[in-house]
Length: 622
Ligand code: AMP
Image 1 (tube, rainbow, N blue to C red):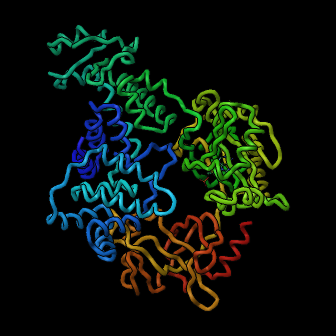
Image 2: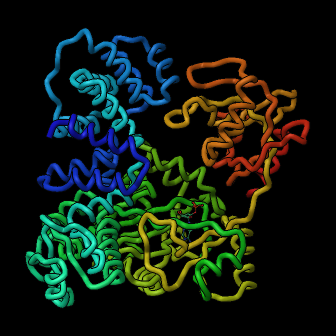
Image 3: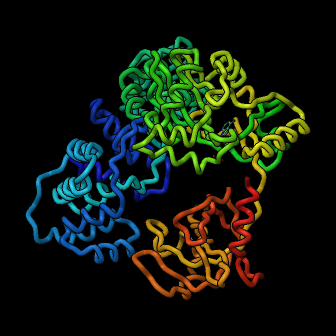
């Protein structure tokens, strides 16, 4: 398939806001494709080069892309940055710059989807010295072969920002639409023109249907014997008795497709299986050890009462540790450890591998856990910030193991000789407890209790905080494990931090849909000599209205610009909420707010909070 055909599909996806239209556009693309092409197309439409579970990254930043564009377009880096600032999108920038250049060059050989995909895949293999320039060469070669519109999407694919508005839900629905029949109720079917389309009718309705519609269906189907499972019937309309049956069957099939994705973490595989083997094939798919799945996420609640309302009573109450989420896979004596982003960190944590080999009795399992660091001298808890130093370490790993030792705290079970995510949480927890042989400072079950008493939860919360942990988790005892979802099956309850009043001292011109607006606000506290010191960047969670408001306030205050970054006169103050304060070598205050959020503008206050207050809050956390 020519890449230009896929580009046309991208353009159509980009030009509509409607999820239903996007679904149909994609389902048409997926239909009738060969297995390999289908795998590829599904990935590329999700803006991916590899499957979600593969720990491979082509490692190309916007900065490197600017260098590649320089090479193919003949423009200077400054010119490219200028164009980027006005479009807010390097993809569009590539299109504009190459468009100007293309008029003078020869027609190029046509790119195919396969060629683009294969070339991008190769980038991940470039490692070590000289790899940066090889990457630039390889990307610029691909861009020089592409039409301007193609270049736009290649750049976006490489930078993992497709701007198509296609999420997992739309891909799932497109797979449903492409490879499963359309179900219609009898009354709907009578009103609809079915002439020409292949039609199956629930056996019970056949005579009536023939009388009313005056044509013979291709065949009848016996829903109760669920023939749908056996035939390749994606091209059919299936007529069933009533609206409720339509809803039920559609919902059932949607759940089967979703489950197939949850266990495989690979929509390419789901699509190919749906196409070739329908419901039956999808139901056969299961997790595989060493292929990570998405972690179930936690909702936030502000009170014990709200927690119980969400997860029900009684609930499982765990300590919430300030560690790192780890999905641990074990099979035939081999262990692998994955982060929440599904990166493989086995090499960095030989102590975890050892702890699991010793302390997990099951041989074929996937465990959800928190890895918690402790002080080797006094055994006290050490915050995540310190532990995070171990994650990216490539050398002297053993030294880090001694300096920042860890303990594994398992809290859920995902797989035991097969996926157990459909089983309820209390069952999974019981199985997990039975397979862990605890050993202090190596592997221990999470601190856990089942209760329905508000007072007891409060006591646990206080105890957890006094021991230096973050708070508690409350969990629904009857819930399944939903990979990748922030369903309310587990919730986190953390004490609310004090807020800080901070001055906006810088900002950045946004990209994409929001270009033309200032965002990513640099916040400053007041230093001892009256100067402002950076304590963080407030970049997420701002609404369009807020960005517009902020731009209006800040634009007249700009004192200097450097690329997309601007410096502003310190006149606009905000009250910021945040998760915690960390030490920072990069910010001039020496501290960084983690996940700052805008609470409100402070029109009523003279000056920002002091560095001394930031330092005090930092200390009070521990
Ligand atoms: P947050 O990162 O604030 O959304 O909180 C959710 C995170 O808390 C999870 O991803 C885990 O890494 C962490 N966590 C710590 N203790 C537990 C626990 N007992 N159960 C589940 N998650 C936990």
